[in-house]
Amino acid sequence: MGVWQTLPGQNVSRILARTPGIDWVTVDCEHGNIDDAAMHEAVPAIASCGVSPIVRIPDMQGWMIKRALDAGAHGIIIPLLRSAEEARKIVAAAKFPPQGQRGLGSPFAMERFHPIPTMTEYLQHANESLLTMVQIETKEALDAVEEIAAVPGIDVLFIGPFDLGNNIGHPILNGVIQPELEQAIDRILAATNKAGKKAAFFASNKMERASVQRLQFSRVKSVMRQAWNSRVVGRIVADMAADMGLKCVHQGCGKQYSDPDEVCRYHPGPPVFHEGQKGWKCCKPRVLTFDEFLEIPPCTEGKHSTTDHPPKIEKRDQTADVAPTTQSLSDKLAEAVSAAATTTPSRAPLAPQPAPTAPPPPPESEDDEPSLEIPDGKACRRKGCAATYKKGQQRSNDENCVHHPGAPIFHEGSKGYTCCKRRVLEFDQFMKLEGCKTSPRHLFIGSGQDKRGKKQATATGEGGEELLEAVRHDFYQTPSSVIASFFLKKIDSSRATVKFNSESLDLDLPTSDSAPKRYKTVVPLFGEIDAQKSTFKILGTKLEVSLYKADGASWPVLRSDDQRTGEILQIGKAGRV
Image (cartoon, rainbow, N blue to C red; front, top):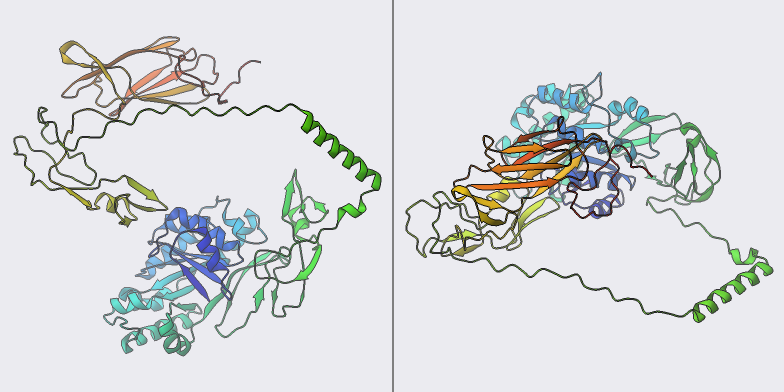
């Protein structure tokens, strides 16, 4: 039996995985509030509790299957299957060659099993051990269920009774399954048994006695189980009535047991891998190969456990083994240290000086400045309002600007605004969130001042050009080059000039805006460059220059007059000592 996780969080995963009698936990990425990042956190949390993580992916896409299996899922569930051809594509995405097309490379998949297999062992046994399950919940899939069940590589046909009932015109209402839906379920079960596959069923409390017990569906008792004595990763599929007992999760044990008083031999400490040697922290044997590591006999006896917390090791009282002379010497040393501490003159610690903070910017005006002209097509500045200004339109207090006064918030996959409680998952839905506050007038230009402070005008050039004192810039580097970006929109490439000097960079960047701007400066460079090999390109939002290093040394900053951060960046050739 298993449970479904629909809320994100590693603690939620562990609580579900530690439920008594649970063999697997399905991470629901289709209908649950779980994105790709939350799935990658849930799978290892579930596996660490000795329970198999299953992932229901959001859609029938190959990259989603790969992401779930590479995260370490013991099986996948594919929703809304419609044909046998789609089933074959799913098998191709989930299986390694020659059975499929899945690529090998994730270092995380092996870590979700205990003991951890090598990448070669995982590759050899994954095709036959990882479960591939498809949901029969559409009319098209029901019509082709015999052909779908016969597809090699499909292990389980998972019946989605609610969607199946809706799609064939006989929905489940008030927990009652209609006779037509029961006939469809009987057909799926017959096709599954004929193909030698397994069937699974989503049952609520109201349907368990009426449907599951009557139909006697099989269930996956343990999706992945290590049998490293023969070094084979096997899958154990049991009938519903079979009683496989409990599984001990102690390291080095992993046995199925029914007697709670049975002696358990295990390793209480974690594995240790250091400089090619392998062993356990709780005992002394060290070996060189992984096969020898798996054969190290357990060093502790106790009782089996189904939790991931083994019993604590009893520690001996070391004070009884310490010689009296040693104790006296340690006491004398402690007394000497305490005496020195009392005689050493003390000095009051310096109180940290609070860092000066810039004064807060003046609040944004709630109305447009009447003396300023509003450009045609100017969009409202308030978040969530998509209104635009049409030249010549009359302004009034009946414009009704519906917007969000709060700031955007993105947390654990959900998106919304701080001013209201609505949260969505997709960015497109976030952009369409209707505002929660209504103002009488739109705000197109406000006071006309740019609060961002990213570009500061200091003077006016020829032809009324606005001369910019600074623009935002950034850089990164390779062993041979420094790639710097100067962010300025609509640079006029026909008039812009970039001159490379050995220790500086001359920039003259006019823009093609309706209100033209110009950024003209000399950039002193941190290091010497080869001007002949340096290049530049003008993009829609920035100028990007590639500065070829003359000596190949690392640059901690771009400009020679920039304050250094103190960080040591080692890119390329190290400096001389």
